Image 1 (cartoon, rainbow, N blue to C red):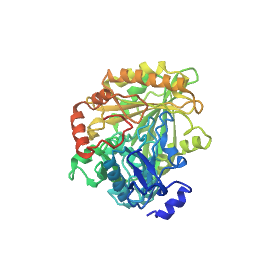
Image 2: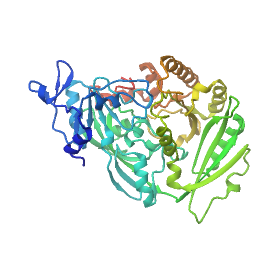
Image 3: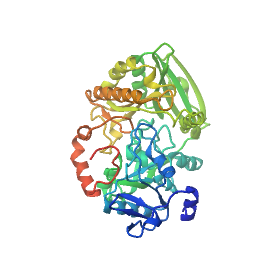
Image 4: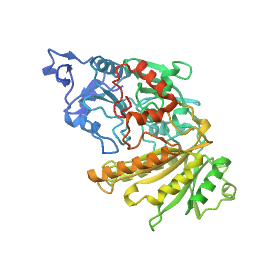
Length: 482
């Protein structure tokens, strides 16, 4: 466990918080603290200096900038409990932040406390059926520990350098089409509620908190530890890059492959075709052991693609391939410095083809950007069980359509942001009109009425859970649900 001395050394000249002034609603240093409430003794540290809090006033979107007045670097779950309890008593807003990969202020707390949940990152155990992991750890770190043991989570996000806490609070969408979302492969959670108490929960033990925390956007509790499913990992992966030039042929083959279930993962990425349109590049993943390589002819039988190529790698290299791309973009200054007004929406099976066919021709170069891309994931509806992951109710499959826009340069200006927000709203209304729902990692101005419509039949349940687990309403103000 990180010691107080080590945390202080790591923060350099950070101003350590000693108390809170209820009159000015401000955090204070030890020299100022005599007449004021004292912050509880912590294993980690609480800081307020501008250089320490500045990174927590932004996220990957680089659009919303809500500055907290303090940041907690916890060294124990007790730290999270103590500070949430402290903030509850004083009406201070609290948000937990993992890797900061939301795009519209979801993990920010203006004038409040941000908890850097990434400080809690220990992997406690890995076994044949489960892994017990601090929620600030990343899926990448779990994979790097588990794959050498021949084990892997059954569902993973494409980009794995994300915290378990953040992903499980959002939902977590995987190209492993028949394994559910990441929130469907969780056995138990430890959650600090708005009362400041850490509670274990599962489908059998404290099931309401379990349901409220998974895909709950941090509204009812802060996930601090998770027990997640593990399954055997194959040694190798073969990725087929299957190219299409038209909407109808692509969707016919995509659905054919989904129904066959021969592949371990399927997702599409669109790339510019050089003439103002887009090529469909279907990524089909087959994991295998070297003694039994895939039969290409059998896997690709009856398809009507324009081109296909394949490549083999280790399983670990395959699941970390997007991380390698992001690391490269970061190294050349073309990732976290850019503005990312992302659009992310779930669509029903009977409307996805027409929706994509209508939207793609309307997109110009700015709608994707030089380092952006568009994605399509398919998830089997019957494998999605968490009530707060709002997906279309009908059909065998639901689809996540993403336009992961990146600006051409850092700081593209207010006009660019306004234009992209307007685009996202237009595309969302078009999606909602055909039964679509929002995946809330993206960049969309959402009113309380929008949230009510989003949650639909589970809205009343969510409101009851909020009153029960966070009665002071201090947790995760960024989404603006309450």
